[in-house]
Amino acid sequence: MATPIIVGATIAGIAYSSRFLMRVFQRAKSKQLFEVVTPGFTVETIEDGFENKMTPAEAANILGIKEESTKEEIKIRHKLLMIKNHPDKGGSSYLATKINEARNVLSSKNN
Image (cartoon, rainbow, N blue to C red; front, side, top):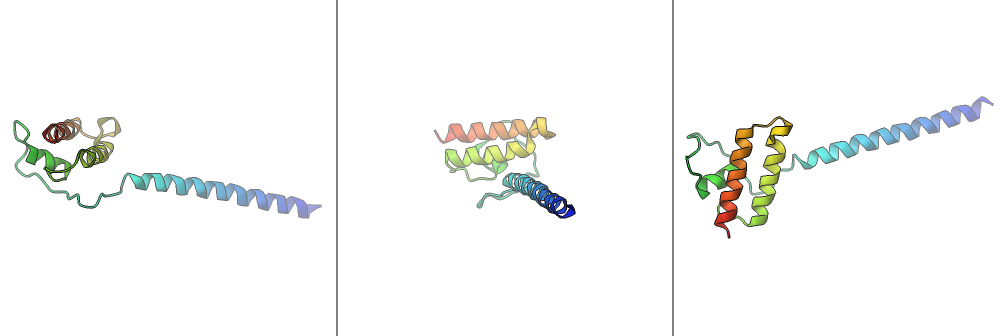
């Protein structure tokens, strides 16, 4: 009589453990999507601060792309930066403003 109970408890334990491991893996996988660095993007420090009126060169530097980048590249890089720097997620509203301004400058330049 004890053998079926032990077998059932073992199967249930394996099922719950598998479910837990699958959820942990899925969370780790989805979190990793935000940490992916797109090839060709470099991060540089702006030592002199920002200019009064943003230039296309400064906008490209903020987004970490070339001035001649396509709208798709601008959109992808903007989204990645906003995910990391959004004020609702603890990021700086000043940086978010500059990232949005950089996107607008480059998007209007590439029209």
